[in-house]
Image 1 (cartoon, helix red, strand yellow):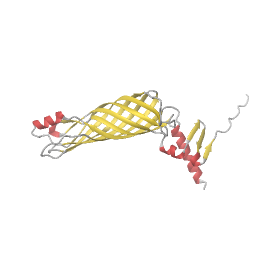
Image 2: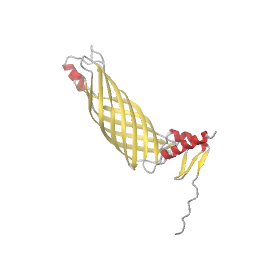
Image 3: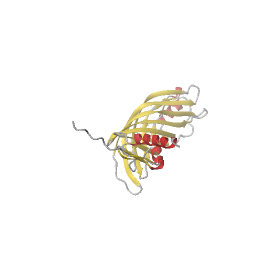
Image 4: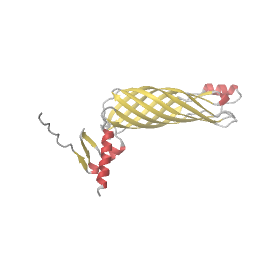
Length: 251
C-alpha cells in the first residue's frame, strides 16, 4: 500500500516539473489535411517524350507534427516534421507515386487576441520555414524510381483557437517550394499548397492557463501548481506544502 502514494507523488512531481519550467513555453501540435501541387510543366515535358497525360491529380493527404517553443511574445520557433503523398498518372504506364517528407525549421510571429464564448483565446500567426526535403518516387516508366534531396522553403499562416478546458484547435495553411525528379520524365512539384487542421497541447509557463492546454498526464492527474513551492494533486489525494523558512541566525 505504500507504493501507491509514492508512485502518485512521483508522477505529480514530474507533472509539476513539466507544467512550470522557469521560463518560456512550448507546444506539441498534430495536424492532418490535403495538398495540391500544380504540375503542368512536368506533364508538358512528359508529353514531349511521348507520354500522354492521364487522369488529373487532385492532390493527396498530408500530416504534420510541430514541436514549438515560445521564448516570449510574440515570437515562436518550431521544428515541423511533415509527410505528403500524391499520385501522378500518364497513359499506358504505371501510376507515379510520390512521397514528400522532411523537417522544417520555422520562425513565427503571433498576436494573441482575447476570448469569447467557449473560446479562451484566438491567435493568428504567420511564419517562414526552411529545411531538408526529400521526394521519393516509385512507378511510372522504367527508370523513373528515384529519391531527391533538396532545400525546401515555405511560408505559412495559421489560426489557433484555444478552448477554456485546455488545448487549442489549429488551422494551418502553407505553400511549400520543393521538387522531385522522376527519372527521364524530369522534375515535378513536390510542394504546393497545404491546408491542415489539428490539435495543439501547450506546456511550460502558462501551460495550465485556459486555452493554452496542458500535457495529458498532468491534466488526467489534476495537478495544479499553485505557487513555485506548493503543489496539489487532488486525484492522487496528495498535497505538498512548503515548510517554514529557516530563520537566519544573527551574526
